[in-house]
Image (tube, rainbow, N blue to C red; front, side, top):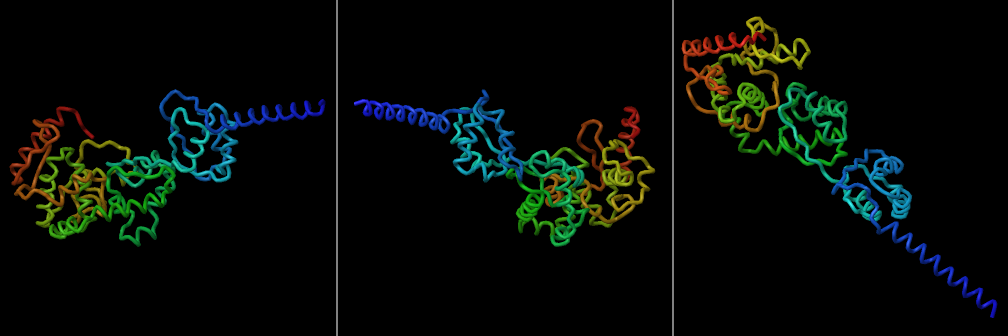
Length: 347
């Protein structure tokens, strides 16, 4: 009888212990383990991270690190960390957390436009994906890639068509660059290529001219008209005489692209630079700015008119006064000079 009681007691203790263990396991797996009040939090797991580094990232967001680690080990995640950007939802349990970190890498929206140089573009992209600006600029300027795809360091900026794209956060610099080449090829449809050929420009030249149009006017509805002026000059063998190219040449010659230049001086027109269209009849060797798609389309579909000149319209700011003759242009120009002098804008 005594032995039977001992056996029964052991059995009861075993059942209680098993129940407690089962309860602990259940809680470890299926009970909410988040601490934050917001609906979601974002966790970034860098490439090459180990499980210890994952814990550093997620521990501020969870209640019980020990139970999370246990589930991660049992599910094989601790030995197979995956980099990326992950959305953690309020109330997730350990099972959901681990499953999310295994398969829930979420893409990010990468947006860029109006960059002046490849260096500026690299800096902009580096704020949106894992690759840093040094890695990006190396990929952008890779000589073998540029030669293989018909670019050089002066035309390469034109390969990046400004828009909104989806990338995984852990996209490498090379992967980003290669994807943008595919987007560039998709952008230049057969229709666009035919239009470029019809107006006597290559796609690279279209983008270069579009960059000038972009810098000349912020008004999208005016861009085809401005493009028409430059196409009139180009087709008639004139120099483009575009002030934005001179400003770019000044910046390039000094190496200071942070300089703000609001007024072009006569001495600037004499600067020796392939970008100075007051000295060279050819288009600049590459874009002076990243043009919007609207500016590219403005060149491809430029307005057919007889204007050869334009200057800022001081009566309708943002827009320009256009002229067919030099005499008419000089009158408009004098009006602008009087206004800029009155404003005290000397540079």
